[in-house]
Image 1 (cartoon, one colour):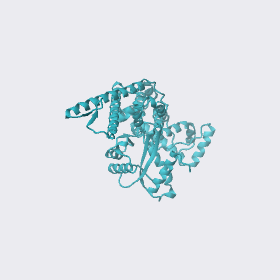
Image 2: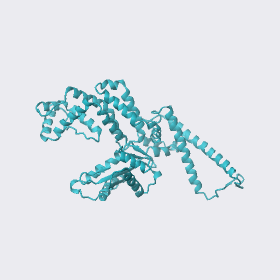
Image 3: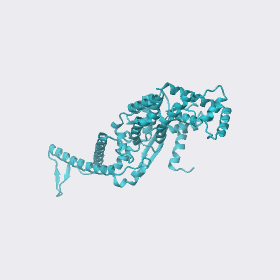
Image 4: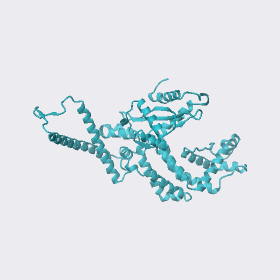
Length: 442
């Protein structure tokens, strides 16, 4: 959800992510829909269904809806009866902001840092003097970074830039009595905070990418926990042990059910970068059984579809000599169905199991490799598994792509165009966003 600052019009974004037949990850904007009325879960659910109906998308066609962690959005997706996943980056946002609050001296350091940054951002003269000092000290001529509450990593960049310009800032403040410098303890706290949060910042950048997949969530969470439990990590941040413990607790609480959620562990299994490397024995067997079951369901569904298109009478079948055999009793039908389904199940399970075993025995690709390119290159070897990969690897792990539509809408709704009708604004965003995706030539 987004509300325009110029006219208080609200919008609901809705993007689509899918894998093409040649296994390329595709994206597109379906709507930046004007949203009137209260932002309740029921109203959000209604608008989601309206958008799906506009594009003629049935409920069973949508594998998963990724959304932020707002209570109204969570309820709206649930009321609309979509399977859902919370944005991984929004979860990190809450984990880190809550953890930073648990240590008062750290919050005081951040408050003092923001006052310094605000001083320079509100004074052109102060910025000019800072540039002069930077040149004299042969430092990079970087401006200071102002953070925003909705982006935890902006607070990280604020600290990183301040620490980079520590000497220049200290020299400037020495000549200005009205501005207070950070204490040695606070500078030390800042350095430790940057060290502790560096991996979180790196993962945030990775998962903000348009190619980031939900299969990355379990590996990233497992890696975070291993990183936070290392003695070397605690040794580097002796003044932030409360934050360190809070990060562990928050991650465990917010991601404790990942191993039980098929949309996560199936995606991880089908990602050639991870497979079962981040699973225990129980999780590996659970993923294997889930895949076999889904394979059986898919085969039965295909057979039912084929049989419904057949012109042969439903209660007759051909014997080997060509004679027609008519079902005479109900229990004859029972025995035949049981035998046919048993044979189908054994054959299907065997085929999927063979593909899965072969897939798991192959060497994992590097974590920086493109999983979609790997599946495109190996499609012929896994005719069954690739069908599941197209489903489970289609989902992004964050809602960043959808939120970027609001940046485009913000550029359209400028001060001199603040009376633009919401419907026209949606059309303009649609054209601006989607035409480049189809290589349209202006």
